[in-house]
Length: 334
Image 1 (tube, helix red, strand yellow):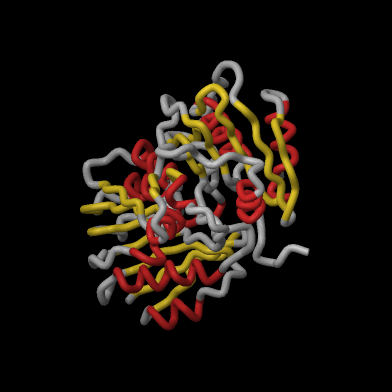
Image 2: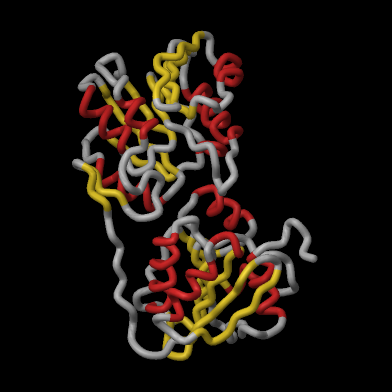
């Protein structure tokens, strides 16, 4: 029986250990998409993989562990011998990455995909099988690993964007179908009171910042801080302004300390599938540290998330402005 902490990464490592999959030849490296640190197995993973990881906290972790890490790799002309794709929560992103990997291989190179059973890996395997012959697979640690060998031409790569009003949203982003109800509720409270130096913590593809700039002409500067690199690129297109700046930031570990007059946010409350209310609490703490006395935080959260204790500990005045549709809007003053 697999230990509780074993998952698709252990299954992938086992495939290499058993020589089901070949290691790179001398002087060669493979690409690792949606990269995560792999378990110790006697194989120097950091020496054989060039990693792509656009989620800032994981990117930092990989770099700290010595992996060669980029936020995005152009695979279009790589001609690599091997590319490993790890799972994203979004089926669309998984399909895009598998297609990118296939197109980035040389003839005879192989693409590997590994994911836990609960992550939809079996249906994704069936999708891949309609495009290429499955060269091998196995199951271990409640996960599936499968691979294909490059034969034939590249596959068409389609990256569909959703357009909602002036905003363009890419697949796999938070609220990929349009602004979520919480953000819409929060934006309904934007007005000319919000002025000066403003930041959006966890800015996503730019909805809150865009709505705020449309409702207040009293803003001197608008900083968008977001951990998802792809979402940040979308925000750059969605919030064009001379007073905006864009920052690839892990708010929980590297939040800005320069004093802002206002911070707005719809903080995340999960980094994986399970809810993690403490993540939102860390955003609140980061906002408190970035606001001087008299600075204000305006935020929205699910009604049942217990943020009030953190808010009352960090701010001298906390007021709930709204409660609708399962969300609460809170304004807090340092």
